[in-house]
Image (cartoon, rainbow, N blue to C red; front, side, top):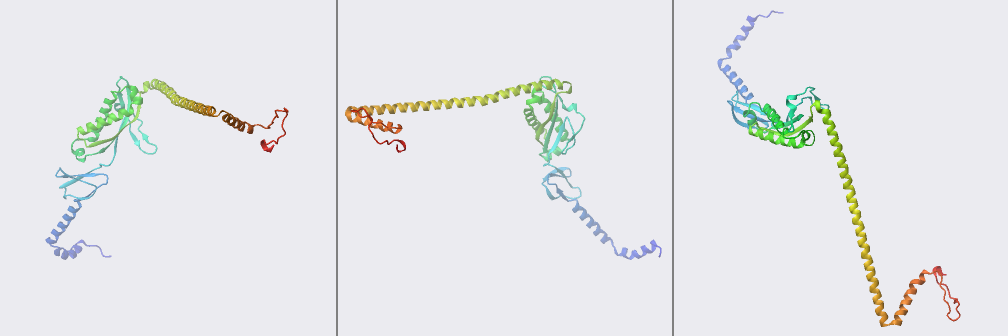
Length: 328
């Protein structure tokens, strides 16, 4: 095998290098610049974002998700802002791993969570603020650190609202009222400072008394719960018994009114019938007497088992055919 000789190799390339003139070199540089310019002018905005485009550091426009072009070579720069993503800030606790079995940091954050209530008690309040980026321009340029501003404002507002409530309200029945008020006041401050953020929700994760007074508070709370339970049971019994008794009373009144109406109508009918018979009797006594007799016998005879006819002269029963029930 022949050894490699650099000198001979360069001698073989020298004719090709002579043919590669300065004009060719310029065209190569131009092609490289065109490729570089094209590569730096095309960009893609993610689906959940908007892009703020700066030209020499000045905000010139915003772009929607998709493929876009800009002036190359750093003349224009784009900064995607995730406007559709929901962010979360935690106060008084930290989540280490969010999954089916969420893992939390075992450390406490008393500087965030311990607060003074309106009746001079202490409450350990843990809460979560979920928010979105509403205005990319304000988010990038109006304030230096929007995330830290959100944390500071949220903590300030929560202390203000908790300070207007009693310990019982904070620890038991006043949670929904507190979260609603905090959400409204926090959003007002974020708008005032032009942070470009919108609060989606404020949730109280956990509210407890300090560990030193927790047993006493739990005892009082259990007593109040037992009281509420008895009150609710009494109201339930009242709501069951009173309507039932009211319905039964209305039923009895309705039945009595119906019976009274029936008796009145029956008496009125009997009276009208008697008056009619009386008028007929006055006009034809014998005929009316005979008709009443026959009507009475027509009502009585079908109800007797046997019929006996006594001869008035001999005072003995007459032998007549029994036409009673069953052909007897």
